Each structure stands twice: as structure tokens, then as C-alpha cells.
Length: 479
Image 1 (cartoon, rainbow, N blue to C red):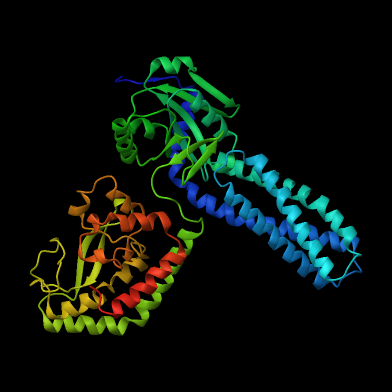
Image 2: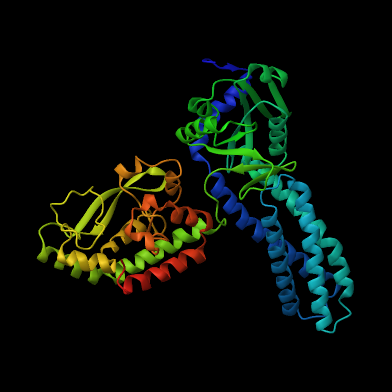
């Protein structure tokens, strides 16, 4: 089908045009979810602390000093916030949002009550039991009210486009209807279905030309050829495949979504490492496993602080190495080379020059220290990894991280297959698992399993461990 048969209402078309004009000005869904998590923990802590403190002040004013009461209330609030956050992590991708929020509130409230009861027993107080009974009833009610208000704020922000990913569902059928309905019923996820698309006109006719699940939300059904332009038409951020796709055709879908810059997900009956649950059906995301919500922010802060401090402290070393390079060989002290960074964006990477200035800057790297292109001082710099120090400037500028897959040259990246391109999904780094492995003497792209393992398991603890091992690795001479 060369032309698309669209059944879009006038209001829905106008909504798409508005989304196209405003899309880049809004908070991304990832940043929105991170900020939401921080705000929610703070609000839950404040709510629980206030309920326990006010209960004690109103019903047991003479039992404990005010400071003691505030300390107990603060501990109870912290316990409640931790318990609610733990429950939220266990059901992170569930669509039964409202029901499970209430269940989490009841569970956390009961556990906090048990903690308070245990504390009162240890303190030998029986007079405060009345206040404890009041807390058992009041805390879950106030928390549920707070959740309702928080939900309204989220919906208001979503209606203005903040923290929303627009979802196109491929495959007109009962599965597509279930997914669309559930996503509309779970606004906290920030996944808004905007269209159901299928190339089968008969399937489109069977399930209606246009569906409305809410008064203010329309999910269009469109019979059209699947192209990057179609996804861009709906300002799509994610494609969900709601029907079985043959393996050969799946590669075509991946190519289309890559060209359109859209994330892809598909339905499966098995548990997925990342995805969401829709009526017992897993909608699994393809691509990199997302780390904890605080990971990206904390990592960037650490990168900036560490690179700033090292650039300042090591500035005499930089000057000394630069002077030695200039005195022992012809050419500049710094070697500047274009590399491919996060999401395929090229950048200029800095190193101390360890090879002759007459060598081509884009030849394959030496595989042995006896390579004639390497200068005498260059052998020492490469064996101690001191030639990598100027990349601290790339880290400071946000082009690289301290830890991550090594950035490759453009001519190598152009030859990447689909699996190798996954290295580009995260910020490249100065050091990583590949540098610490026995495979360091061989090309990076031929040992992709190191980077894929890092993408799947990356945490702040793993990054710190890699940095520690890198220091000892460099001190004992490297490869």
C-alpha cells in the first residue's frame, strides 16, 4: 500500500501539529520520572512524619518531650518512605497503578505501625497506645489522599506535554486495544497511545476507524505503510508491536525505528528484563537495560567533579609530559582525533601524542609496543596509560565519562552491525571492562561481549570498581 488511509478527526490532527511544535521544549520522560521519584519520596516522608507528629501532639501531649516526639515521627516517616519506595520498585512497570498504590500504602502503613509498636514496647510506654491506634487509621487515609493529589498533579503536567512518550501501536487487534486501554488507565507511566497502525485494511475495518477511550483522548486507527515518516507524523517516541512479526521482517522494523529515533517494544508471554505488564502480558523493551533512576545524574556529577579536580591537580604533569613530547619528537603534544560518541554523535577526542606526527591519524591502532609508528616516549605513555589523561577534558565537557565503552573511529563505526551499534547507546568512557580484560590486545568491536555486559549491569558500584582496577592495572604496566 503506497498511500495511507488515515481516519483522523480534525481535532486529533490539530493535536499532532501542536505536539510537533512543542515537543522539544518539554521535559523528557526519563528526566521527568527521575524528578518524580525524588519529589514523591520527599512528599511521602513529609506526610508520614507530619501524621505521626500531629497524632502525638494532639492525643499524647504530656507523654514525651517535643524533641523526642519529633525524632520518633522522623524515624517513622523515613521508614514509611523507604517501604513505599521498595514496593514501588517491585511493581515499577505494572499498569495496575491505582490499585497497587493503595496496596502499597496499606502495606507500608501496617509495617510502620509495627515498628512504632516495637519502639513503644522498648520504651516501656503504654500511655501512647491510644495515639498508635489513631495512627493506624489516619496514616493510610492521609497517604491515599496525598496519592490522589499527587496523581492529579502528574496528569496536569502530562496534559502539558511534560514527561510523556507518545506511543504508536502496530497491529490492529484485541491485543492492541488492551494495551491502549491499559496505558490510558496508568498515567504515571507517561506512555500515551496516539495511534494504532496496520497495513491490513481488513484488520483496520474489523476494529473500527477511530477509538475514543476518554473524552479528552483519542487513539486513531490508521491503515498505512510502515515508514519513518509515519512515526514522525505522530511525533512517536515508542513503537509497540502488538502482533507476531516474522524474524526477517523484524529487522526491517528495527531499521525503520532506528531511522526515526524511536524505541521499539514487543509483546511476549515471558518475563522481560525491562518492560511493563498489561493484563499478564509483558510488553518488553528492546535495547539497553535501564539502570536505577538516579544513576545518570549521579554519574554525571561524579564525572564533572572528578575530572575538574584531576585537571587542576595534574596540570603540572600535563605541562611536563607536553614539554617532553615536544622535545623528543616533531609535532604537537596533543593528538586530536574524531571519534563517535553517545547516540552516534561525533566529537574530538584528546590524547597525548604517542606516535609519529607523520603517521595517518585514522589508521588502525598499534597491536604491539614495537610498532615503528610509536615514539620512544610514546611507548612509556602507552604502557602506563598516561596518554589517555587529556580525555579528562572530554569528560569535563560531557562528551565522555570516566567509565564506559571506548569510542571508536568513524570508519570502524560505519561497519558496525546491529549488535555492535548498541555500544553507542551509552556515553563512551576512558576506561571499561574491555580495557581490564585479556582481550585488550584485540579490536574492541571483535569483543563486543564486554561492552554488552557493562550496558546490562552498569551501576555506580561497578563504575567505582572499574576505576579502582584501572588504577592498579595502569600502575603495573598495562598491556
